Length: 153
Ligand SMILES: [Zn+2]
Image (cartoon, rainbow, N blue to C red; front, side, top):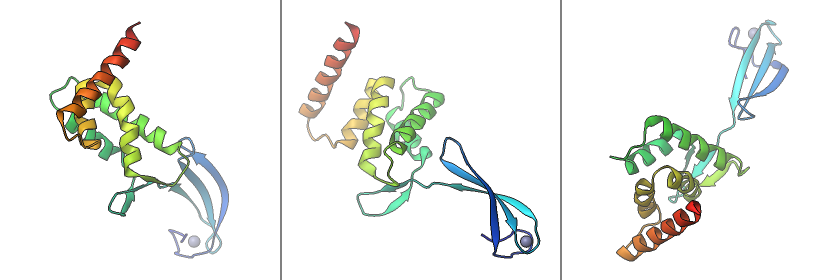
């Protein structure tokens, strides 16, 4: 870490604490050369491993845009999308691994989306689970009905 004032590379950490529920670490540093102090924030990067083998940083925005597509024409507002993405992020972060396969992100989306809007859920699930026939939809709808019946009793 270089000093932003004199570009000296030897800086001492004088204080370190977790911010944003441990997602990032804020460090107070002191330059050994000029003695000036500055703060750095290091965010723990959560990587998503795609089927192609490429990794990319987890992005809440990507979750939102994927779900938004499934919610087209449905009574789901932006606020609900943001909340859903937040839940997905919490779920994948509590996994405790720095790298998660993309299908697990999809899996983490299914649960909250099902609670949010069943039609959007079906659309999303049909792509995510690559439904290939009407039977796949029928089975999923049967499951939804069972869950709904259980919920109402
Ligand atoms: Zn300095």
